[in-house]
Length: 289
Image 1: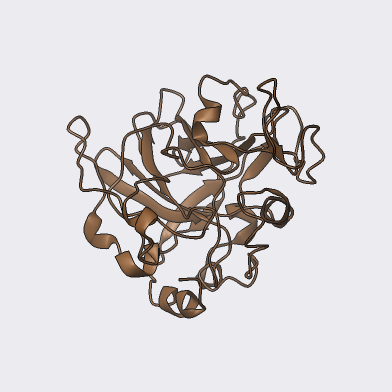
Image 2: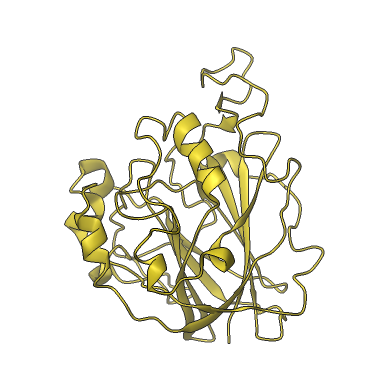
C-alpha cells in the first residue's frame, strides 16, 4: 500500500488546465502555531474530568469535535481584489462517490480539522450555490471505498468508477467498509463553505494533500489539490498520536511528482491556525472562471 509504486502510478494521471486560487489570511486564536505548544495532556490520555484529550498539543477526536463550534469567519476582512491564476491538478485514482454532509470524518479519529473555503469569481466576488467536494487519505494513508449514492436534492454524488479500489484502500477491510473523508457542501450567499473532518494522512511518494472539485451551475470549473505548510505537517505527523506511529511523510511539497507537474506550491498551501481547544482551522479561497 505504501510503496513507491504510488509515485509511479500517479505520474500517469495528468490533465492539467487553468484555474484560479487565492490564499487567505489566518483565522482563530493562536495564529500559525504548529510547535505543539498548546497546554494539556501531551500523552493523549483522557482527563477524569472530561477535559479535552490532547496529543502533542493537538486535540484527538473525530470531526464531531467541531460540531457547533464557531472559530470566526476567516474571510471577514475580505480576500483582496487580485485573484492569482493557478493550474489545475489530476483528480487521481481515488475519487469515488460522496455525500452531502458537513462532518466528513464519519467517526474516524485524528486531529479535528475545519476546512474553510470560499468560492469567488474572477472579480473576487462570491459565488453562491457552488458545490465543493473534497476527499483525502486517513491517518493510516488509505482512502475509503464509498458506497454508491446520488443525492436526490442536488443530483450530485461523484463516481464510483473513478476508484482504483485495491490501490487506494490497500484492500484494508476497514477502508473497504468505510466512507470517511469524502463529502461536499454548497456555498452560501457569501461563497463560503465549511467542512469538518480530520487532518489528512500521507502515503509514500506523495506530499500531504486534499483533493477538491468545484462545480457551479452544472459545470465543473476546478479539479485540483490543496497542500499544507511543511512545519505543520511535521508537527502533526511526529507529535499527534493518531499519526506519529507512521512518522513524518517521505515526500515534501517541493519533491512531490504531482506538484511538479505544474501545481505551484506557494499558492496551493492552505493558511492555518491552531485553536485553543487543540483543533485546527485551514483556509483557502478558490476563484473559478
